[in-house]
Length: 319
Image (cartoon, rainbow, N blue to C red; front, side, top):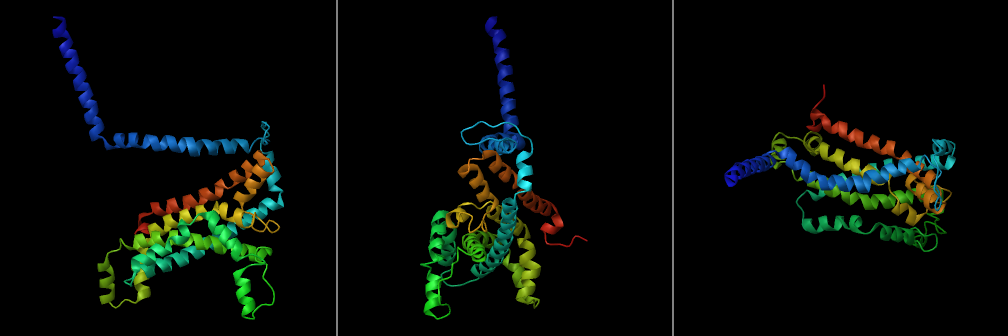
């Protein structure tokens, strides 16, 4: 009798397990959630926790080797009156805007060029990636030698051509230093933009171009009314990443100029490192890093809201 009583219980348990498994197998949202749990844990541990800790440190007077105390917004009030901080904000915005705009222009041109039928196209696409795959510090050291005040190949060439009489102090002059670091960032960032946009161009149906050609459209009209509208969502994503990478650039600037001369190339990221690690003022450095968050959120939200507009995403008018 006991065995007979246990049998229905086992059957009910098996039915429950089967139904739970069937629910998990057929409910894609629930299954997708469990697949996302490891990635979510990774992001919380390596991104959310450090971000929250950095924001908390910005409200303390923590120093290296000493536990800090809560001081409210004192660090931010001090930064508000700090001329070097505002100079770093100006340098960061200038660096990001100029470099991102030029990278987009050159990257789009290279993408259109590499999308055409030409000999050795696969090899050229691979060569374009070289600046992006070279380690950042190695690239920075190479540019540091190129722009060196004594051994610069540019100054040597111009002197032998009789254009200049003495070497140009590229990294010692404020204007030249800004131009040099922007140029180095452009050289590294163009391949990312070009290859990403090239991947987007591969998804455009050739029949659209054939129809436009038969209708007598010029190359500019084809680009304006076919290529650009269909590339708009990809442009929004790639430029968002480009702006984020450029705005938070640290290695290139620090390896080339250390923020000099006279803080002319100090970005918010390099200034934060200098104040927090070198000077030991962790609270102040965290405040500078936290001040970057509104700018980064603005760049993300502009792209996000743009992609939510279906008409804009499809290249149509919004009226």
